[in-house]
Amino acid sequence: MTVAAAATAEADGGSATRELDALVIGTGVAGLYQLHQLREQGLRVRAYDAAADVGGTWFWNRYPGARFDSEAYIYQYLFSEELYEGWSWSQRFPDQPEIERWMHYVADRLDLRRDIQFSTTVTGARFDEDRERWTVITDRGETIDTQFLVTCAGMLSAPLTDVFPGQDTFRGTVVHTSRWPADGVHLDGKRVGVVGIGATGIQVIQTIADRVGHLTVFARTPQYVLPMKNPHFGPEEVAAYKARFPELRETLPRTFTGFEYEWQHAWADLTPEQRREHLEDIHANGSLKLWLASFAEMFFDEDVNAEVSEFVRAKMRERLRDDPHLCDVLIPADYGFGTHRVPLETDYLEVYHRPNVELVGLRDNAVSHVVPEGLVLADGTLYELDVLILATGFDAGTGALTRIDIRGRGGRSLTEDWGRDIRTTMGLMVHGYPNLLTTAVPLAPSAALCNMTTCLQQQTEWISDLIRHLRAEDKTVIEPIKETEDAWVAHHDETAGANLISRTSSWYLGANVPGKPRRVLSYTGGLGTYREKCDEVAAAGYPGFEIR
Image (cartoon, rainbow, N blue to C red; front, top):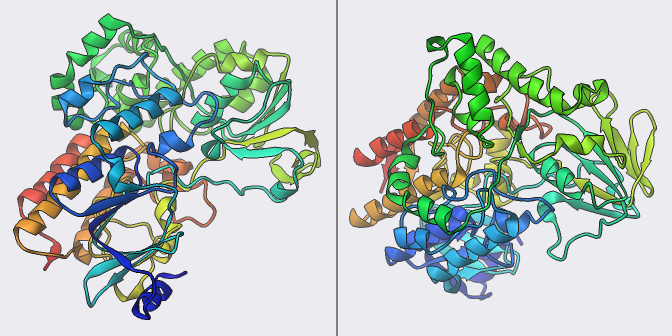
């Protein structure tokens, strides 16, 4: 049922409409906190989620090996020391089951479930210009009337699942990593194929290699990788990180990436020997620090980037034993380190020395189609499989919302608008869509170069403060004017254009989705700078926004 049809049915005496002050889409990190904040203001607010429980990313991504690559003690809410100290992590980078339990802890500790409706997909939303409210419909046939529509649907939550012709003819099991069944997939002794060697594919591959009968890895884009060091936490380690809460609450929101580490040295200030020593020290840290806090010049200076890239390549070549085939397929040669998402791994490269693992490069021989027996490449080669695992990524940033029929002023479609040009105002609102408030969408720090909990807390807090301001001023509607959005898009593009990320082809620019408009999806000016700009707008009373 379309939004218009639902409205007609209601007018004709159809099902009753629920009235809300705010409707939140999603109950992951952003959605849970947004629900808590708006409820604390006394709003009638309800969250809806297609999943059967809370967790967002950590509900859907149950694939073998799924875990944090942000340190657990910073992937946390910072608004409550009591909430922070009430949960203890077992290791530096916990796995998915432990993370999901943490999300349940948050939902239960804050008593959020009574205002959440699970197993419900929001399918459409229309802004009624006469009433200046949103009419929202779900796949259950419900109609909700709400003043504010707040999207917390996630940056990486629209998986690319139907990617090869013939997938439905496969006699075995086809599963996308982001839709892994809760009861698992039988892999022991099977002929398993994994398509994709990004961060997710790497976690799967390194985890299942010793379980399957034969593993065929179909590698598309080579990736720079960094080794993960993942010590377990005992009582002393837990006490130590919990004692840092005041420091982390003060510093994390103001760093460049929302992580605990920052740039320590300028490239030009060190000798070649000192640079090498610094890179070695950070590489040994076993985290994303080499990517996010080694040398800022790496993102802007091609010569600096080339040296850092070669440092990482050499580390990879050594572990691959300089095998020509493995090095050619797995080590990047046509883009620089840090300009794509950098995965952390544990003995991943060593997997390719196992006798039951075969590496197939797709660069010059892509997947053609799927047949009942398995996967067929462009040259006609058939790989017979029992299980096909798709680590094929997401329609990042936009996909979660373009899969909903969202209609703004004049019936304009967000799917159609973003199909022509991906634009937002600070990643928090979109011109033409009054009272639509967004998190984890393009042109804000999200997924790329940002610890997600740090970024999402800032965005939900800005939204909560905005709604509080409107209510205090007895106003009901807000929308960015076109000139405000034009200015933000120009600032975003200027910032992105100054760094090397904008010169590569990756999901950071939407390059993995055919026909998607090209734009660096995430704001690359740094979380601290972004926060300052957002705070300035709020402090000035939201200039450049039409408020009534």
